[in-house]
Length: 391
Image (cartoon, rainbow, N blue to C red):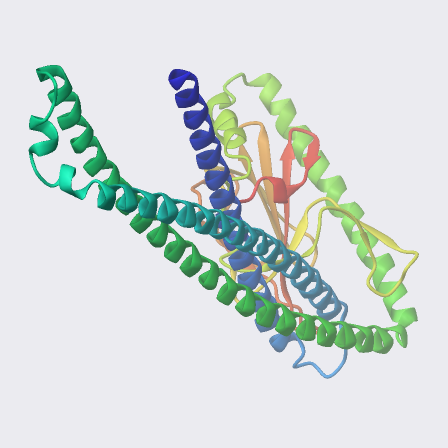
């Protein structure tokens, strides 16, 4: 029976430890998520301030505002998750404190009962008469053992009572600390809701302004679609040529390919700082509800004068001009990364490049004052979502 109780106690202890560990991991993950979102919002605010210096509303500004709104909504969700976790923990503390107080009362009662027994037998327990009046040696040993165990039990009960008091105090302090964190989070949440509402108002105003230029916007959409198709056709042609070279030359760096693939989700960003303003795949147009813009990569808005940075070791496959800006493609074994919308380029075809190396200066639009890098990741002929590769 004692052995069985021992196993049950160990199981409960392990369960408690696992639950505490899971909570700690969740709390740490949320802290990191909140920190990342706060940093991204700060970056988008800084970029918006520069963009909004133009008197006329621009599509890029609308994209930045929409990105910032999305980040604020994600941040509010993260805050709510933190609040849910804290309130759950406070509830657990309250339950623990109740159980400890019940245990404390029980220990106090048992201690009081022991003191009564001690008082009633004080004459026997305080001198040797109780032992020497034994009928035989064995009885004397039993009485001696009884006195010793009784005194140890008194000490243990006193220790249990002090332990209960300490545990209750600790739980109360933890609960109060969490309550303060909840108050702080509520204040941050309220502040973020106000900022979100202001961003939405600003976005609606910008969209209203842009709708007055609907004809120009439609012409711009058609122009960009044509440019995108030409760019993608050129990219596919370059990749096909690379594949043809590979079939002719069996010295393809398979080790580099494997290394690139093993770093999926860990690659550094192709800019020092920035926010994704156009995601991979189909993107609804900010002002034209029926128009969907397909994106084979991601567009990252960054600071004026920023450089495009190589995300992994490789070799420059090609550098070409689109008519107004430049594109750099880097080969990483069977993988390719593409950096478009560059002004000055620092590399040439065949150059070996390292992770973090500067490839070129990202173009800043003259009309909208926006600096945006278009970034793609390819695996042979297969186009993939760049965000799944970046950390």
